Length: 341
Image (cartoon, rainbow, N blue to C red; front, side, top):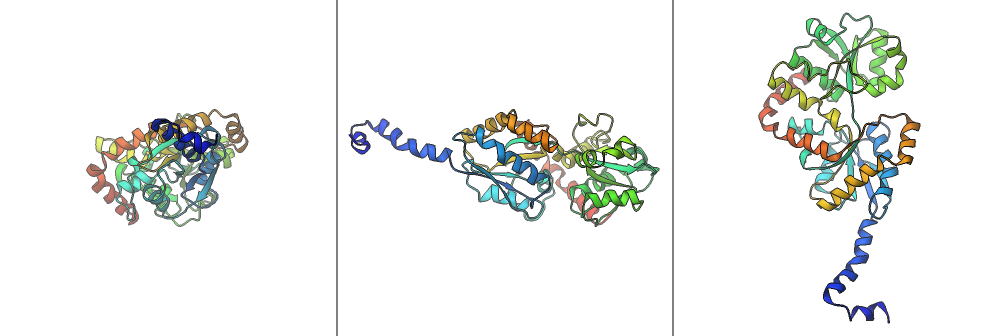
């Protein structure tokens, strides 16, 4: 008896299940795309492709997974796509700037997403940025940066690496004099070494991996780390949040530095079915113990301090509740920073 003939004798319930089964399998096996909110190279691309290489083995149906670059407006273009255009079936994921929530809080033009309404799947590693000074600088602590000016090399005015010390100027009254326009962080570190500037704000991973001899020989002073809590390998460096003196200052600084905890994180569109979000989160968690992934991480020497998406979701959901209250103050700080005040 052919399959078509057998179907005629099935009950309606069984008929529905038989007809639906091939569709369910096909849905599970649809290719998954991870859209990277930057061009090739760099941290978002590196971690996005790391996840793409390994997560498919831990998702229902073991679908193929590929990373696609979608640069534009500091990851805003990619986030807009994921939020408004991408399919809501778990086949389109994103990774990009951890400062998306800050840009949303500032009311940045062009944003068409709500960060807390994205479905956060998991984080591979946090992003810890630090402000450092060269050994010969008179400014060796954050308190001393409040007492006297310090020339700080920076990239573009809109870069988080530029905005962070400017925020401290406005909130904590530090006296970082920002010299922006350097091509990248390597250029700011070279400028510091040459004596053009006294310090810079850079990724801790970059400093640790590319300038380990500076740390060994105490050629730089670590003034502050931009995190909610002290990083495990920076137990003696104060956080910007610790330096806040009032509840309002803590609230404002927490929004600036929360990107550290978000870090290199994967997210899915709003409206993705709860069961699919759960499958993605469980698959991500299973991937973190995958021997092939761990070998990949060890070989590349990249940071690896993962956390589940539920924690990221909770951080951003709580943070979003403060946006109406502090948006005006944040906007004023941002405008002042752009004006170089």
